[in-house]
Length: 278
Image (cartoon, rainbow, N blue to C red):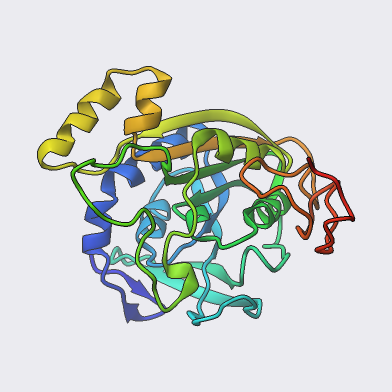
């Protein structure tokens, strides 16, 4: 498929092929939960966006994808840009893209939407994923849904492969995976930001080769422990049940110390004497 974004050809074939099964599963979820007007977080490289704009019953109201790739992207300016996506069918689609640091900047995306997709994004966040979830809360209608996917941080590593647990350093801090979640940690974080969990699924959408095919067999045997250890991907669907500007409490995946922003009961100043979290 030839994909043009604002007139520029974007090569997506390799990326689309690698993620095809995850795209299919995500779209099935979006259809099953009613679709509607949605925001896609992390649109670039626009491969999933190209699938979404062709989907009956789904309207891409906006994407949120940082246009600036800087070495130290702690503070990115908020910028809204008109985007035109041409998937080669003679009917270019237009939407707004919001470029911002989603864990540092609070912003709206126009009228509230029915659904937000945040697929393979939260693992790139460096320090405040609850701020990302509070932004998503802000964008959704009451009762709106977020579909979130991320690598499974509890999956068993190949015991015969010797390599670091964390991915290689990259020149841009957001290009690498900065944290990997367990299902319990992920759902707990989401619940602190005004959501209730509708579904919590384990997926294995990527091809395995050689001896690691045994992992897929063990995953298919079922049972929560086997899925926790052998699934590749976590997928959570959550419903907005209240407006929130702050997390209701400290998420379990956060260090129990002061200095956090926008968390009820936690002092924002880094003063160990200011709050007792133990």
